Image (cartoon, rainbow, N blue to C red; front, side):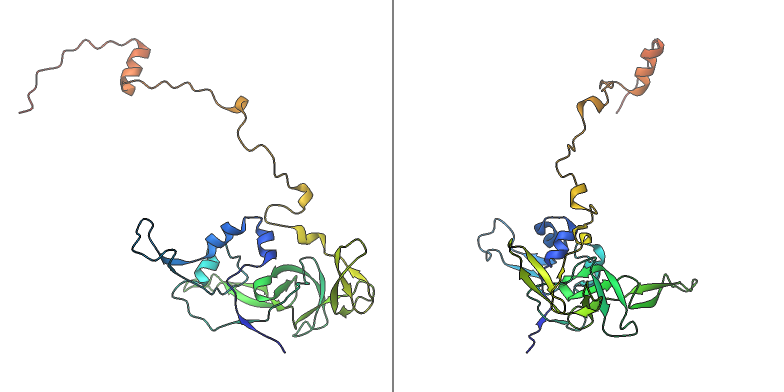
Length: 254
């Protein structure tokens, strides 16, 4: 028996890893707090707030402005129920076979994982046409867009030996490493190198986290400006040797 839950307010681990940002920052960027207890007022209930509790996750990343617009306070959409997955088995770079739709039987590479919705996007497959930039004076541009697929029913991993779809399970090697094993051939399906890719780098080895980020002292420009209590015109006159010998006429303010 399958148990379904209505969305979730927690961002998936793979999304956090791909963002290469602290989880606390990602949470602050997508949460919507409409009111919270002011600080310094003991008569208010502590830590009380009015905020959005459920979020509709889409192909837009949770820290983007598009995600915030899709979860705006005035936006009302149908509820989406998600089947919880205990051990996630699909990663970016995996070869999968599509089991439903017009591309049934075709194999492709996963280009994006949306763990919050149990979605994967397969490069170049399960596409549809959509019109971008249409208005009264312009008919728009038709582009081909890849639609997401459910990992529970729409795709299966490809066995590396038979190149056919297979069910898998997680097992442990003698060294204690957790690996995916094909139930068809008992072959290990390694996690692709592309799974390490984030917004900042393609490979973890190429990312230098401890690089000196401050400007070196030798590259700092020398300060030549010295502030003075005089106008720009007075500086020019001093530079050119011009002396003011005129006597201003008397004036009265009243």
